[in-house]
Amino acid sequence: MLLGSTCIVYILLTGIHCTSGFVHTWGYHHGVMPKRWGVLYSTCEGKHQSPIDIRKRDVVYDQNLQLFNLNDLDRIDDVMAKLENNGHSVVVHLSDKRLRVTGGSLPGAYNVSQFHFHWGSVNSQGSEHKINGRHSSMEMHLVMHSDKFKSVKEAMNTTNGLAVLGFFIDVGDYNDEFESIIRNLRNIQHKNDSVIIKALSLTDLFPQTTYYYRYSGSLTTPPCYESVIWTVFVNHIYISQYQLDQFHSLGKNHFKGSEDLINNYRNPQPLNGRRVTTNVRLLYGES
Image (cartoon, rainbow, N blue to C red; front, side, top):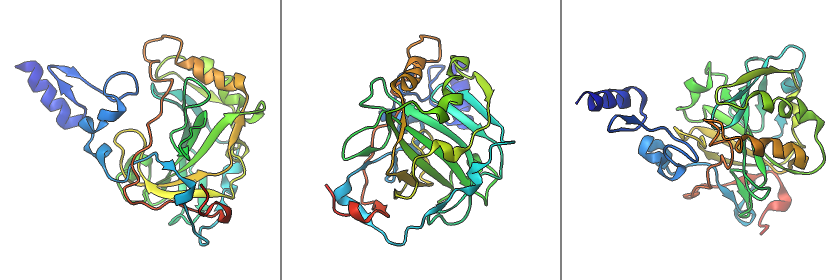
């Protein structure tokens, strides 16, 4: 049958699952749900998947973990930033190859590609990683690729090809540094909407970055390649309730393609023998 033949060809070309002429893509609340991502991508059933629940009592102190050098991320004058609704998250794309991260015991320099957010429908959930079984309200991921590669796409299927800096976000005081992002959310209500936003210093968005957890894992969205050096920082970012609610509202506007813009996080995956380390001595053995 023609539809069946088309379907088979489509699978071979894209890896996206297709049945009886209908193409199925991954999602959080439509299409193929997180628990069945392995149907589309076998790599999502790997043994070193992310995110994880970081249990402090099991974290190992590593005195050799170095501090990060984030000096290059202070650039703001001529860095182009594009805010996009990709249907699954809010993404800020950064195309300046001078945005590099070194140190942090990474195996070389990593170029920043983008950062994006995961959030819930209520304050008690939203982050992908957990600490001692508890979510934060949001999580921000700064996605980088090794400078041995030209792009994330080129690096994503190579061991240590990617590094991600993860930051927990919770409710606190109003955060001026996030205003250029949050006030433009109204301009990206629909999937594939994008807008150029005012250049910003990435380090101004970050909390104190001295202390962190480290483990080897994967992309938290398909194709879930296990090529990521994960750094999850101990200190949290804080934004106001009003600012958090602007993210919540994206998934409540009932526009076509907005279904995934709430509770857009993957649940923690089994550690399967992996070791989580930290450069915080006081966390060693803490429950």
